[in-house]
Image 1 (tube, rainbow, N blue to C red):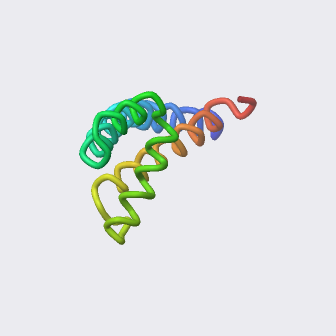
Image 2: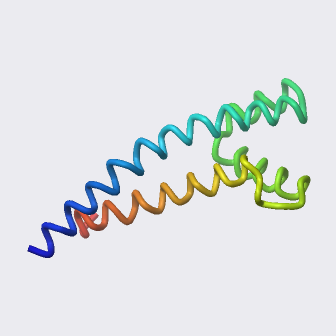
Image 3: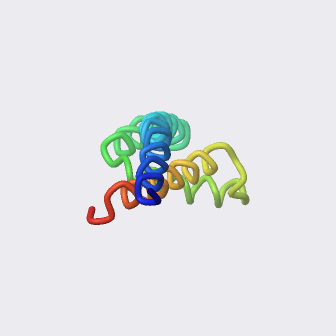
Length: 99
């Protein structure tokens, strides 16, 4: 009985975190391209477009250091995305621990 509840909870977490993570990843990538274009122009935007994960990490730290705080919408969106990734990982372990 407990294993079935664990599986249902895992599917529930996954069914919320996965679509939210997909949506956030698209929004954050577009947002990052806009930030790069505003800061560095077309070349920066093109480089950011072609290197999504690396560019988002770079601009996360750049925005954080420029504003002097992590409490801004861009950085919080990236942290929220990382939470979604963590929840997806936890949910998959709850559904099937051998994955």
